[in-house]
Amino acid sequence: MRLQRENVVMVRKLAVVTAAMFAFGYALVPIYKSICELTGINILALGEQSIPGVRAALPANTQVDLSRSITVEFDANARGPWEFKPAQRSVVVHPGELTTVMYEFQNTQNRRMTAQAIPSYAPQQAQAHFNKLECFCFNQYTLDPGEKKSWPVAFVIDPKLSKDVKTITLSYTFFEVGGKTPAAPVGGGAV
Image 1 (spheres, rainbow, N blue to C red):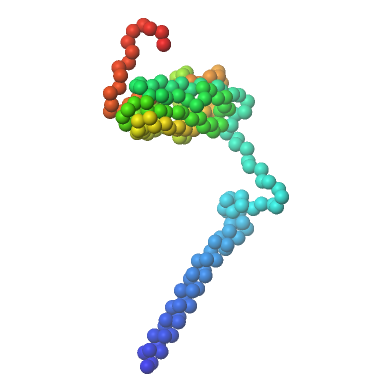
Image 2 (tube, rainbow, N blue to C red):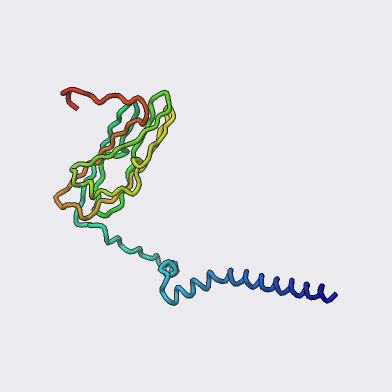
């Protein structure tokens, strides 16, 4: 009988400890936010503060050079029977500004195709300053017969690019991987 009473007391103590641990864990989030607001440690907690009726202004991106503009032209070359083109031929950007453009693809063959794009830049010195954050050229893609896709290129031009560069051409050559790629044209014909 004594052992049974001791077991019941122990179970009650464990239940109280478990409930206390659960409550403490639940209370940690508001306690953490309060401490962070008081000390200014967590910038995210400070950013969550808002005044009713007043829209918070976002800080300006100080990396963007608004004093100059660069025209970025987009070119697409396909090695094989499929359609590949930029959704727009050019954009005007400020160095340091994040820009996203789309490229459109369509497999016009009657079979599946795996392909990849290789970029090139003109002038050549722009390559070191053209930073792509997202690009379809990073991967190979498989397209079913007749399938259409649009893929993004997100980029930032480094403000350290020479000020005499006013236009950059980003050119992609889209080719089939592991398939029957036609040979490059030979001859002196106009392109």
